[in-house]
Amino acid sequence: MVVVRGRLLHLSKMWRVRSARLPLWLYEDSRLRSFARLLLLFLGVIFLASAIVLIFSGCFVILFCKNYRYFFQEFFFPLPGWLAVVTALILIPTGILAILVFARNSCYHQGTLMYLLIVLLCLQVSLTVLTQFYSTWMAVELKSTMGQAFNQYNGTHSLARGSGTVDMLQEKLQCCGLRNYTDWLNASAAFWHFPSEKSHVPRSCCKKHEDCGSDLNQPDQLFQEGCLRKLQDQIHYRMSFLFFCCVVLSVLELLAGASNGILMSSVPLYDIGFLDSSVFS
Image (cartoon, rainbow, N blue to C red; front, side, top):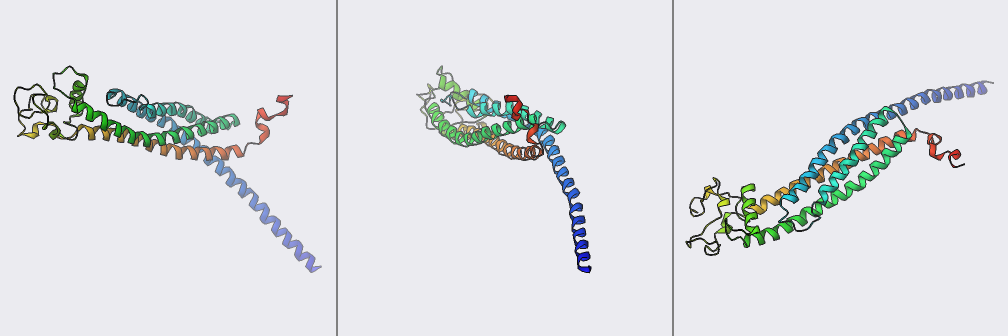
């Protein structure tokens, strides 16, 4: 009798422990889902802000290739910029859906959000690869086309398209020569149609927009940096910024997918209307 009584007391204690654990588990699950909803709200706002940043970044790449299209012969060099704009346009409804999932826990919103997150991840992986590949390719192409343009330069007042582009480039970037101003010292004065045999640099190299090319004893009147390095730095900066944005957004999208998955796991399958057998009857 004592043994039976002891076993009953032991079973009663075990039942009390298990019954005490169940509400705690439900409470922790509720807190996890609440945290997932709050995280989706925060990420939705971040996605909307990031879409604006991506649009401007993509437009900067497109305009850069357009402004210096004489040096970029391939028509598909602006592709990373266009891909960034497309990604930003998809990122806008993704951010809106993330906020809607926080406001109203709808299985349709959750499913659409998960689909858009997968599409965005695919686009951003492609954009990440393209930015690294194009950054190197554009730098090599730029070195070749700029070297050809500078070698064919034949004077500031020349009507040749390449000469005008070189002058425009040097004035806009405040640079001189391909690597520096000494690149012009080996040029022939007769080839530039100068009356003297002294070495000259183009007028576009002068800081004060006056003819300082005949006085090379005062190099402080000239732009010191080369144009090639400046343009390559701009390419590297734009592509690196896009690369950084894609990596950060990919991590945030994975977090959004995980949060959305937690909320989707709490929705029973029979709540999804298109799986109902009556739809197909």
